[in-house]
Structures are given as C-alpha cells and as structure tokens.
Length: 123
Image 1 (cartoon, rainbow, N blue to C red):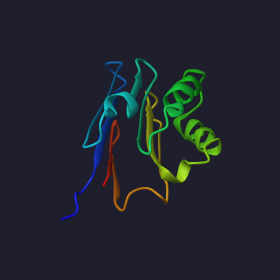
Image 2 (cartoon, helix red, strand yellow):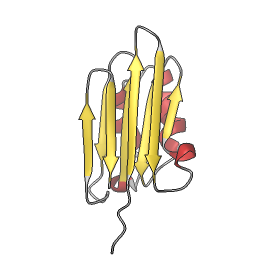
Image 3 (tube, rainbow, N blue to C red):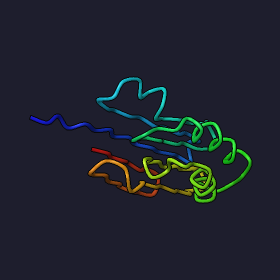
C-alpha cells in the first residue's frame, strides 16, 4: 500500500486586531521551521511542497518595504529556478493576497480563499 503524504497550511490576518497567524500540519519533519512565517503587523507567508527559506527572508523584507503580496510573489518566483516545485501563499493587512502552485508540485493541491483567511493543501 502506498503511503499518502500531505501538508496543510492556514494563513489569517485581522486588520482590526492587527493580528497575523499561520499554522501548518504535515507528515514531513520540521515543517514548523520551514513552512509558516509571520511578521507581526506586516504579513504572513506559507511556503510548502519543496520549501524555500528565501521566500521567508526576502518575501517578508519586500513586504516590509511596501510591495504588495502579488508583486512580492512575482519577484520571488522570478529568481527561483525551482519555482515549479513550490506552493506558496502570502497575505497582508491591506487584504492583499497571492498564491502559486508549481506544475511539478504534488499530484493534488487545493486552495480555499476567504477575505482574511487562506488555506493550502498539498498531497
């Protein structure tokens, strides 16, 4: 029997309360260090599938400098030769959102989007 692998992340922001949150569960080890990233008062980022820690470091820096989630994601993907193996979502307090799933990602991916909450799944 083939074992299914999966990762599930949820991102949320509250403009009124000035809160951010990101959580992840997975059968992979140490995802808490690689997948969820948050900068209070600025943004939340989740990078999963084949994670890239630069998405946290560079992404949060670009968002701090005022780039929108869409422009931030576009810039991150442009500089990533492995982008087709990634799944990433970004949210900010201005209700900006951006997400990407590469064509080489897992066999199933999903996204659920609401005004201030976003979930990502990879199986």
